[in-house]
Length: 80
Image 1 (cartoon, rainbow, N blue to C red):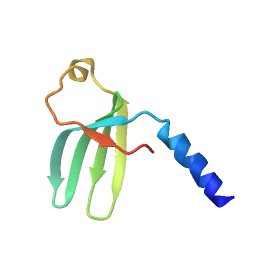
Image 2 (image 1 turned 90 degrees about the vertical axis):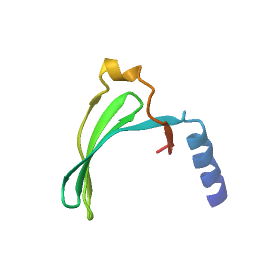
Image 3 (image 1 turned 30 degrees about the vertical axis):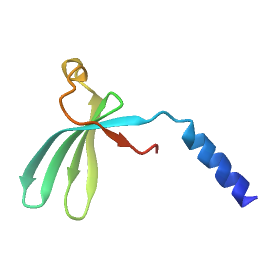
């Protein structure tokens, strides 16, 4: 019974398309605090990170001028 449930969950996750993630900018703000701008599936996330926490500060659609730029390496994000 448990095995069947796990197989169903695996099959559900396998059907999801892969997401693309691009780290656009990394900016240290102070000692141990950094701001990240990350693009995932056409949305930009601003993430603040310190030694003890990670926080999503804002999210919005990627500006149109940067959707076409493909300069940075692309990483595959896990299907969550």
